[in-house]
Length: 100
Image (cartoon, rainbow, N blue to C red; front, side, top):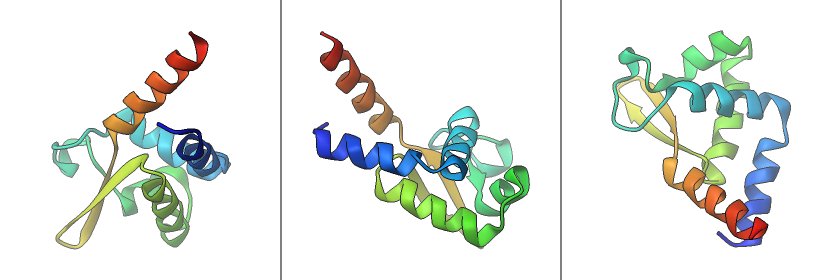
């Protein structure tokens, strides 16, 4: 992961609401599991859980997706979201190499 991409990730997480959205997804959501099972979160669920307007949540999700932190997929009328594990692995590798 190059420093420019790391800076982009940090910029995406610098907004407190966006960070809360990301942390909510990181706490529960993995790829490949059904939204109803609680492992993917739908935009409407996130808005209700975080007491943020759905349009605001959508904006924050767009920024998180642009930075590569989350993945979004349409499922019927819902948009399901989950944390992108490869990005987290690359960030972890970046910090390990910086500390070496």
